[in-house]
Image 1 (spheres, helix red, strand yellow):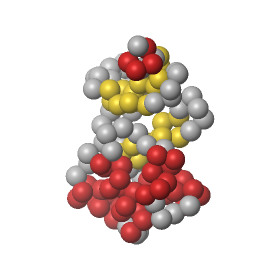
Image 2 (cartoon, one colour):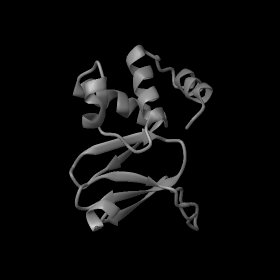
Image 3 (cartoon, helix red, strand yellow):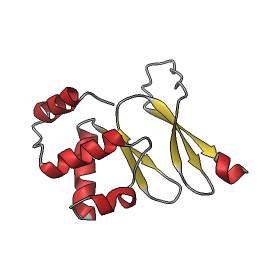
Image 4 (spheres, one colour):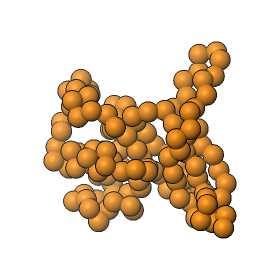
Length: 125
C-alpha cells in the first residue's frame, strides 16, 4: 500500500482536490486485498456510476490506480502500489493478486502487471 503521505503528495503534485468521496475511494482500495469493480463497492459509495468512473480515470491518470480488464467485460481497479501478477478465473471470473515476481524484460520495457488465466482452485475442484 502506498503510504498516506505519498498519496497526499500525489494529489498535491497533480493539483487534484481531495474530496470526501475521493478519500473514501482511496481508503477502500487501500483496504482491499484484491482488485475491485464498481459493483463490488457500489453499496458503500455515495456516488453514481459515472462519477465513480470519472474518479477512477482521474486516479489512473495520476498514477494512483491501476485498471484491469476482466473476461466479463468489467473493469477492476487496485492501488498502483507494486508490480505484481494477477490470476483471472475463466469460469467464475474472479481476479486475484498473486505473490509472483513479475520478470523484467530486456530492451527497456516497463511491466505493470502480468495476467494469468485459467481455473481458480474452487472451480478446478
